[in-house]
Length: 217
Image 1 (cartoon, rainbow, N blue to C red):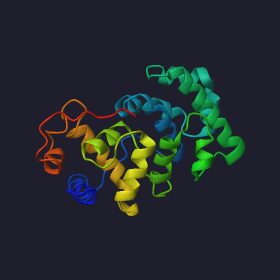
Image 2: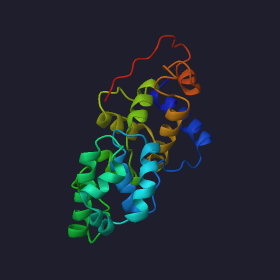
Image 3: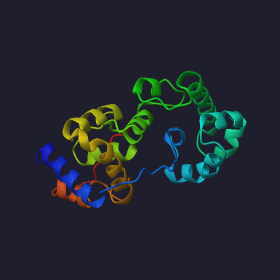
Image 4: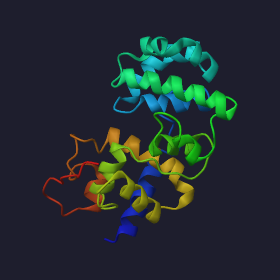
């Protein structure tokens, strides 16, 4: 089976399973989504949502977040991994949004990635979900499944993103990255599927018998 054929099967199945996938991180505007994605690094979306529920009630824009101060932000997110650094990043990016962008979340990769704590993946999520600019954020689920499905060699998340953009229609990118994440959490999990158990792994590689070893990003 060619890579293009595997991609077509994946796209068809995921559209059937998740026709309108929601954004996993709870938010009320572009700013709170940006903050939530920054906080999600090395943390689960579930935990982030638990903590931001209280945080966003008191600070849902850069001005209010700065008023909390670094220590104040920390008190809301202290149970997250890397909470000390994340508190500083949230405070400093909020300050820069006010100083350089009139308190608004910028709509370009370059400007987003210049903000503290904002890497390419975070910028891609904001660009795709807020500004509807075709992007393909790659997280650990997408990196893992892309290898299991023979869509990328898995050398790095950068390479995975390039590979996926080549084989999937650009109009599907913004929804597809969410669909893959949900499938990776529900069916093709890190421990629950070894490349031989879930529907898509069995369909794409019916003769695969041995456990597929994924390369870590």
